[in-house]
Image (cartoon, rainbow, N blue to C red; front, side, top):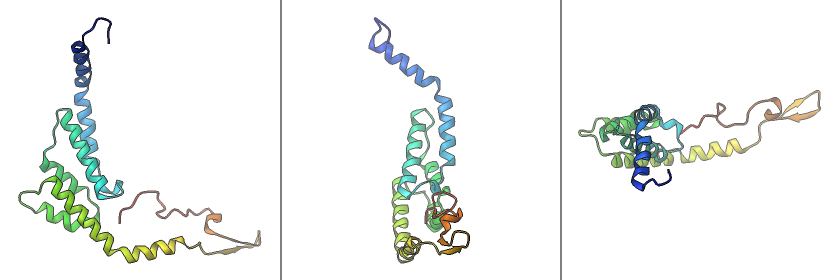
Amino acid sequence: MEKGSTAMATWNRIASMFEDNQNSRAVALDQDFISTRMEDFPNVSAYCQRLKHISDQLRNVGAPVSDHRLILQLVSGLTEPFRGVATLIRQSEPLPPFLKVRSMLILEESGLARMSGPASQTALHTSASPPPASVDSSQQRPTYRSDQGHSNHRYGSGQNRNY
């Protein structure tokens, strides 16, 4: 604010600053929108929320995303376990609205979790047990994988996997 400036003058200065970089922001947001993939999120809800948030930001900078484009982007970024529901959504005529697609995906995620429930419980139990021991002759004590420089990280690559 400048001394003696009116609220309207200040508002106009702020608005012009926002509008100055609108196109640059639209380009960056659009790039973020098209590169968003479900594999980068812990669940369907977080993935949908991120795409919707970017879509809303694009609308705010004068580059609105149609519901049709939002659904197509959402479906194209799904992981392999969602292939069946993705096909169903893509073949719908007309495409269902965003909130319905989100509900369909959450329901599918819930079903997938129930189907893999007992198997994942066994996998968690197995991964909780200590790694096999081997004898290190130089130290005369059992050594474990972590002592030999191996990672105990469940996924090895450090990437988040959605199953």
